Length: 199
Image 1 (tube, helix red, strand yellow):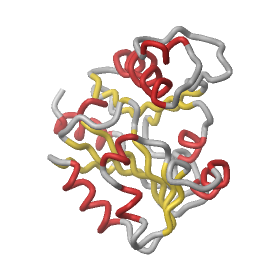
Image 2 (cartoon, helix red, strand yellow; image 1 turned 45 degrees about the vertical axis):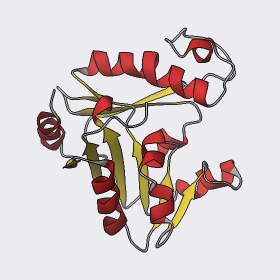
Image 3 (cartoon, rainbow, N blue to C red; image 1 turned 180 degrees about the horizontal axis):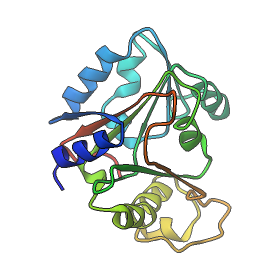
């Protein structure tokens, strides 16, 4: 499904959506749109590929557990920021839904409440035709690759091939959140980028 159709389905659900051809254009937009704010960031390879932390830190106060300092404290501060940035692990284009799976819960909980605005940033590789395919992407692509990147001791991390539905204490797929529509009182924007970004 093309990004324009995905955009239309997301907009029909009440999300504000912008489509950019390149990561540079998306990063430029975010750099202008977010100014003089406190910004929380969830762990995201997509945001790292946009250099979002480096760029936004020049004129905002940005909290990210991936950028140094005490991770627990950074997660706590990010949860109370004016603006929260994260990626979507998958987008069900047919129904215009955003899916995220999480191990600690900081990303998914922060996407639900407490900010002036939430912004999802996703490359075209995150777009799946329907909910079933999006969910399969979470379990068999996203979680194994992230577990391997984070050097977790899970069966999926060994090969980064599929979910084994393990009970490892290092398991990173403990909670699933589906955004069907923006949460009441919290504007939610989706940035779609016509490049493959993140997992």
